[in-house]
Image 1: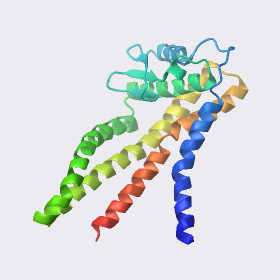
Image 2 (image 1 turned 90 degrees about the vertical axis):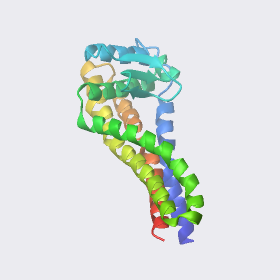
Image 3 (image 1 turned 180 degrees about the vertical axis):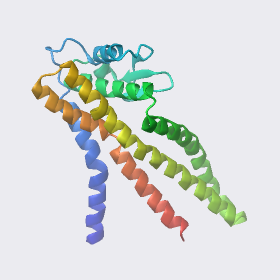
Image 4 (image 1 turned 180 degrees about the horizontal axis):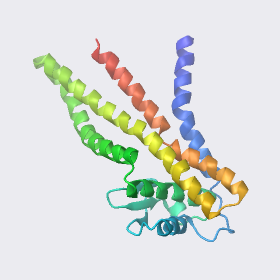
Length: 225
């Protein structure tokens, strides 16, 4: 019974953050005819205000994000073309990342460097896991080394998530919220709702971080055998 309760608790911790994030974003996604522009307009306006003239805004189907390689704020069509509170606030959040990049902030730069390393390590990890059973027969030491490489790739991926959390939090509350407040784009009621949306935007990676930590813990226990 205790193990069942623990399993349910872990499952809840992994699932509930993502469910809450989607609930908050959907709750405030209704069209607002009183807004003068959509999410794309808000992003372009803030970028111009911050004099980030080399940053572009475009549509994506890969989720809202800022691409530091091409200096592009990418928004899904419902955010780019939508006149909703979620659209304009998420746009401000992604502009916050562009501002971090422009200022060469340490955490943002570290996250970017780890992400590049994680990309290549994650391409190597599946091959290492695939080879490990075969190497266990002919060269046990090499098999264990392959598993170490795979776990190392997972560890780097987890580090990316851990570093990402404060970067996301700063994009929401160190950048986007002050921009929205100082520009007086939203009334007091919408600003309270914007706080919830920015919290959701910052916590998008929580579930992924928890999953990564669980995976690493499982593989470390395996390697200790």
